[in-house]
Image (tube, rainbow, N blue to C red; front, side, top):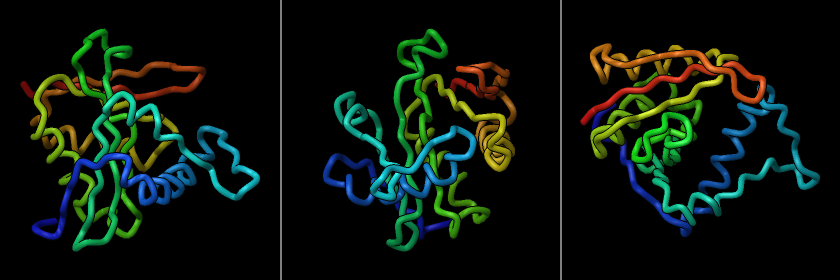
Length: 164
């Protein structure tokens, strides 16, 4: 991807742009999760818990244009590792998909923080599964674990690795 990608950790001041990007993200996810649109024509995503928990909230831009976001939280409940990181939400705008933006974006975040990382992917999210296998496999040189779990009646892939 190169020099055009900029990644910034952001706070509540970036809520307006995040709210817009989250609408696209939820629109993509709505069929798999049965998410209904609100009476106001929006899906809505409440960021307050991320701000309160001081989760890692990142915006990506390509040549200044919003290209995606990542919401990083703790994976403690999933891996019984209290200091493990969870890529809770990750989104790249369609315009920038299949151009290396997502892989460079997430690899940069992994490089910034070492430890145990978890990525949970809904099995029905067919475009995401090969992306994550490729990105994680390339980053770890194949040294990661993968299993399938059922959570709330839905099948998920859990990928995790330790980059300490």
